[in-house]
Length: 287
Image (cartoon, rainbow, N blue to C red; front, top):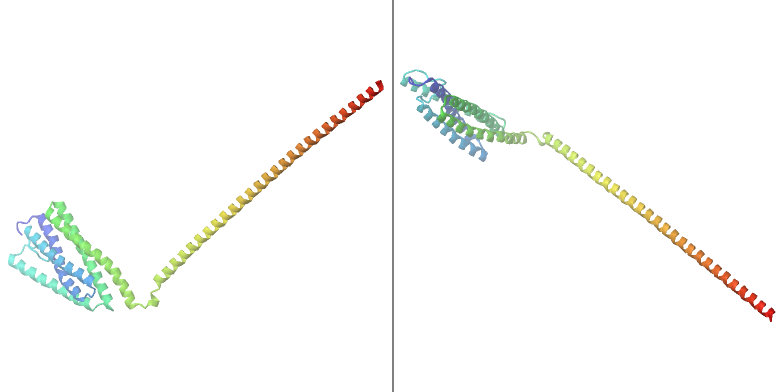
């Protein structure tokens, strides 16, 4: 550690903090796996336990590459090598003991099975976000000092922690619902029913309003059609009346013309007869 630069010493400090958290969570996850009865939940915890052990190994390897030793302490101390190893072992045993005790406490908390699983999931969710914060800080520090390898390592682990946190966020909602169904009577869980009834009444109102609107539209269309028919009938009757009047007028005019022509012909015939009779009289006198 005597040849470690200030830059690397700070990175080693942050890596050791993340390393100590990973080792602590190994014991907690093992305890939670033994308590979990949900197959998908247990499978995801087992997968994350493997990831956690892999994270600890990767962090330890990177710390050694930077010239430090993997310890669960905040800052590398300038102590003899033997004393440093003893201190690291003592710290590791103490953290494992604390994690084991915490797992034992978690096994007895809660009023029912689903309640215990919910409390474990909330604890895991909190731990995941603490790890996300650790690796976010490591990644940013490594970017600042130009340590690409440490930045890539922190980024990869952070993404795995974020995926686990997303899984736990969904699981917490599911477990909360299971706790409510397991411990609260159905008669006291009517908040959703009320909302459902409100939605149903709102939907029925909307449907009835829509039906009324369609009925009004149909009535209006029917009224419009009847009005159009009436107007059409009126216009047709008017046209028929006008045509009848015209035909009658034409007939009357033709009749009057015929009467006039007949009277004229009769007058002409009468005049001819008178002329003929007068001519005959003259002829007979002259003889």
